[in-house]
Image 1 (cartoon, rainbow, N blue to C red):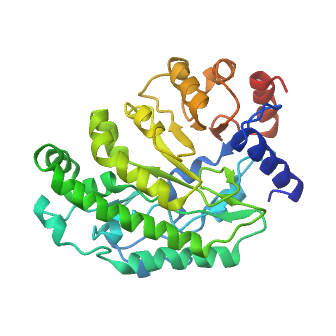
Image 2: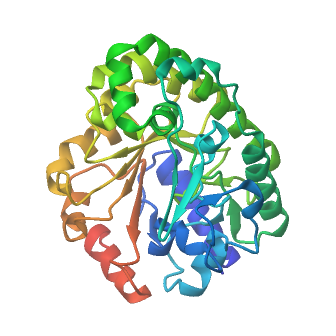
Length: 359
């Protein structure tokens, strides 16, 4: 467990260096448990069917993020906050919209079920209310049973572009965007309203703890916080995002108030400048992929983001470039996440902090 002193120190670092963007000794640095990237591994026992129903998802079937991480964690002096969420392997919003949740060894995925784009208008949302009820039940259970250093976060809740791509199938979704964008736009508004209402219901159940809230990326915030995403837009021209999905993300940001970030992959971030224009958005989360630009190549983009906003940088790849890169970008407003595959001990963390920040 994190001690009260460790929690207080990290919270103050988030408050000062990340939220207030004040200069200091260093930005917050979190060492993320690599097991949390594959939450299908939280199963306590094999699952015997090919489809998952809301009633299947219980504490007897799956461990929480906290239960998974604590026994394996080797670094405790970092700033990564401990958390639990409703099981992140479930595609929650997709399931609420009617997608079957399909199980295979090593993964869960939403099944496509809408045969024609015109059928989207016929689906009442939520199409499967028990999935939302189950998600909220799990959040309430986790709030009631959380350890002192464990915060309850919202689960992964994808945006309307990703949800519609799941409902229709990705190829058909992209064809719909070309052929019938007005139909997609109307459906996307309804999906987005479901997302907003679901997040509002989640935060109505989750009180502040130690003066704030934590997201599953491991950062602390003084108010409810969430990271929204539209990964399907990484495969489109930026103008498609600007015209059809940016207004919806702006509506989500306005509805939730402070605390909204936007998730991007380095392999599909051409629309990042449009995202930065969303009024009230707190910042970006950027996951660095091995098949995209290197960290060195991303320096101008990282600098631009930090000069305009805040950045959660998930450096899963190109770790060896981090110390040099951190010397070329602003540190105010930065939260750095490094998987424990790169930093596996307190001694390794101390060496990294000294090489990167001189202390």
